[in-house]
Length: 561
Image (cartoon, rainbow, N blue to C red; front, top):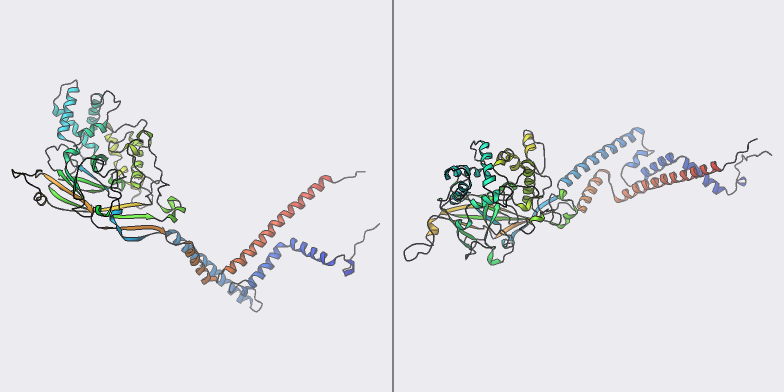
């Protein structure tokens, strides 16, 4: 029986003609998704709320006029992309800004810095003579004390490279002698720190009288001066434990009479090895929680003269960071909050004073890591609290002097970022690179200025006894440290532009170029979402059809003759 197909399109030949028509229309649309996309795109251009796009398909315009409109829209789009990219780069470059929040911030709320006083003479004559006598008695070869005094001058190289050409073999030879006859029975290696502390002039001989806020205080206590390590070795440090971080209005320490006043011994009778070509002493002003080192961008160094009444004025600037910046990464905002800073410390020295994280301490830790890696030793001036691993670490001796001098340029020049600067390529490569070190988001920065008067004015204020003698000799110096202003400047870092400011700026630019609006964004997103959905749906349906066809192929019955 032959199967005949109807060729008539009459309505009575078609069962449910509307459904058949919709089915054919759907199949036609599926088979030509690209043509349907073009038709809908044309419909979008005719009806979109953006200005001028309906001109591209207007039947009232000639082909030349449509081309002119097309070129106009292309030029406008390119200009829009360029302007938006430049605007975004500007937003990124100026995402943070530092503003002056309070120019009259009370100075009593600013921590008083630590003040380290170091003598220019780093080796006491009396102490070096006693040590030379000990070496003479310990030596199996009979030599005069002058022989050992001459070689003990080599210890100046621990502080500064004086530029005198000395045969390093002399250093090694004398250090070999010290390793045998200059160590105690319980020491495995020569303890440079113990010896240099023994040879350094004592703070008791340097500081004669102290007063704070016009009240005389004991010079040596936890609330006053203590011996601490600085870049110049053991020095006398005031406020080492940051006891003056919080003060009241009466203890602002904001005048020369109400600040810190120290009377120092100016006698040079005990001089043996001065390290600077100056007739004075050294004062380091630094944060109490930081290791005092000028090369770590921390300490401010001043050189008051001997026999002078010196006035050291301190001016503070407080820098804080808004909490809204915590959402950014530390390297994005270029600073660490307190909870982000990593401060590795040694279990072996946890019982001693531990330095908190700060940018100067991070630089010092980075420098220590480099010194240990290159010279296999630790200079006695550097604190053990900043050493990451103490295993196998020894103090640098005279045998390490040549290595220390070789890399001195590297350790005195530190980079946290590297930028190619023509002519400085070698210096950039030779400098110490510490990219992990970032400033603290909350910090206090100091600057100082100094003036001096003759000591006669101070001597005239001293009381005399029955013999017309004062309690202090005339061979003294006076140092006054105080805040030079009743107020400090308070700065805060915050976002330069909030999200709504960026949104409004970009919206204004797009409105100027193409008349963009939220309605146009909705129209374009609806159009794109529609075809993304249809494309995904088409892929899913095709996968279902292929899977069914594969299943039918496996179940197909073949009848062979």
